[in-house]
Length: 138
Ligand code: DQA
Image (spheres, rainbow, N blue to C red):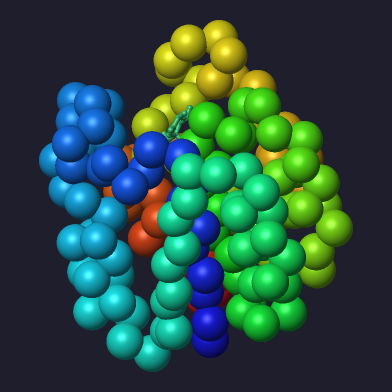
C-alpha cells in the first residue's frame, strides 16, 4: 500500500512554529517514526509553501498511490484551486489538521476541501496523521 502525505504552507516549521499549538517535534522526525511504525506501508511526504506546487503534487499523486493525506494548512480556508484538485482526482483524500480548527478563530472553521474528502481528522496533534494512515489501511 502506498500513502502520500502532502503538507501545505508553514508546516516545514513544525517544532519551531507556535509549539503550544503544533507541538515541539519536526515533521521530519515524526515522519521517520511513521515509517518505522508502518513498515509494510510505503509512505511518502511532500511539503510546499506554494499553492500551485500543492495542486501539481495532488494531480501527480493521483493513481500513483492508494491514498493521500492532505494538510493544506492555511490554504484549507482559502484555496478553491486546491479544493478543485481534490475534487478532480480519483484517489481518496483524508483532510488532516494538527490542531482542532473548530476550537480556534472563526476563519479556520471554513474548509474548501472538506466536501470532497472521504474524512477529516483534526485536533490530535501529529497523531492526526497516524489516525489517517490507520483509516486508509482499514
Ligand atoms: C492547520 C490549521 C490551519 O488553520 C493553519 O493555518 C495551519 C495548520 C493544522 O494542522 O492545525 O497552518 O492546518
